[in-house]
Image 1 (tube, rainbow, N blue to C red):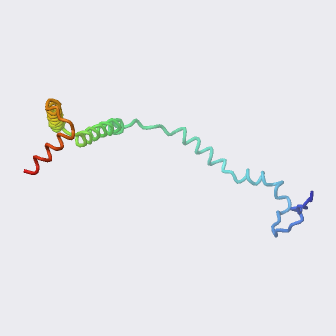
Image 2 (cartoon, rainbow, N blue to C red):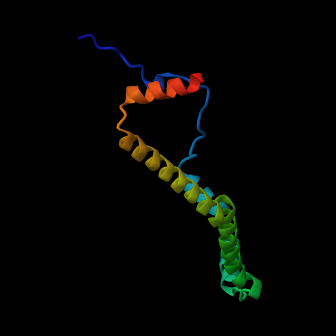
Image 3 (cartoon, rainbow, N blue to C red):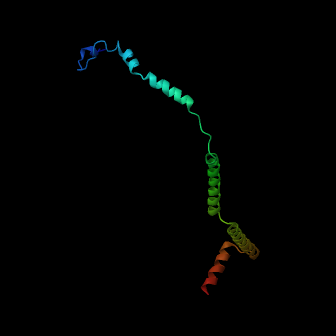
Length: 128
């Protein structure tokens, strides 16, 4: 196997350099820049703030919105669904059609005609 040499990162010169003693004093400099006084005053002011009691509108608003949603849903369902009269008329029409078909089927059975005889009968009738 051929081994490849990986160049050492310390051998590369990037043009940047860290000042002497930078990391030794980093923690101390960060701690000095933290705003300790502001943190204490913010904590004290957070303890003083109390919540105001909600107003009547704030308490009623969710219930009012929910009621409006249900009214809207009922309105949409009412518009989208066919009325009872239309349904009754469609059902009556469908029932009348089924009775007609049943009557015709019974008449054909009673006439004792096969499909060819029926075809010939209908073909003769249209020629006159």
